[in-house]
Amino acid sequence: MNQTELIKVGLDEATMNAFSVYGRYQLARITYQQKDLYTVISSMGTHQARISGKMMYEAMSFNDYPAVGDWVAMEYNDSISIIHHILPRKSVLERKSAGVTSEGQIIATNLDVVFICMSLNQNFNLRRLERYLAVVFASGATPIILLTKSDLTDQFDLLYKEVEKCASNVQILKSSSVEENGYSQVKSIMQKSKTYAFIGSSGVGKSTLVNALLNDVVMDTFEVGKMAKGRHITTSRSLFVTEEGYIIIDTPGMRELQLDQTDFSLSFSDIESLSTHCKFNDCTHTFEPSCAVKDAIENGTISNERLKNYQKMLKEAKHQETKQRKQLKEKSRPHK
Ligand SMILES: Nc1nc2c(ncn2[C@@H]2O[C@H](COP(=O)(O)OP(=O)(O)OP(=O)(O)O)[C@@H](O)[C@H]2O)c(=O)[nH]1
Ligand SMILES: [Mg+2]
Ligand SMILES: [Zn+2]
Image (cartoon, rainbow, N blue to C red; front, side, top):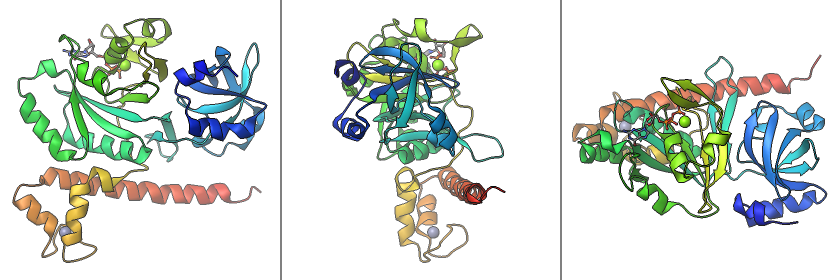
């Protein structure tokens, strides 16, 4: 097997080991998805694939379908190849759909780093940022906060400090598409063969950045986008490799991000570690006496809005969990 192409799209030892049991298949990585048609890269090059009938039949949830970033075991075919297995994922970035069910959607898998993009104009919103952080921490990938459009503010230092308070253990970078070397901070932390995804609200500049990293070569030919107010709105996820060998995934802007898997211990580590000093183990930090969190709010270490958001997100996550447990029960009930 010629592995050069696969190494370019991020093949590592863990993946190779996981694949070794599928000897008669080809190893491939999903770079694009259009409904049930996938674009994959294998040692044979780029081609189209679908999942096998067996896979479709056995799929229990959205998690059982391949997503952009996945490594798969595939049967090569000149016209359309057939995907038979998804290899274990080292990270899964997912979100809930806004509907009544708790069925979610995978944004991308096998990511090393997720850039949470927030622009320094009207889009600036710390509560939303906290939400994104919880979701990325839960994915297994490393979050990095990217403050985009830094050219649009003259209060950068102030905003930076505000962000820092919500993300003490996370790297914070800035970018600007209009300044010379405006993407140098992003580029300086990127590494060959690592996979990076860019997420954030619509219009914060994700595709502009991805285009810049690709020197405008690939995006124009691959991107299927609708025009809104004269600009491309990204409608699907695509995986690209830059000249330097960085693997990058552009994603559509998200209007809302519902919580499913969340990791509050990392995204709200300040509050969670303070609460171990509250008098009561199950302190809700509202009416209880000797509450370390309330003390921190009083002396200004933590903002009241941050605590409120934390409580709201906890509640939401619990609600999702209950809903999911119920659905799981219904699913496992034998069909009549
Ligand atoms: N001033 C300024 N404008 C920018 C910057 N980056 C992007 N823009 C502009 O912001 C608009 C939106 O940029 P996009 O890159 O399409 O945003 P996106 O995040 O990909 O949006 P979706 O695909 O809808 O999620 C475009 O008109 C860009 O030219 C920046 O750093 N500074
Ligand atoms: Mg875009
Ligand atoms: Zn408390």
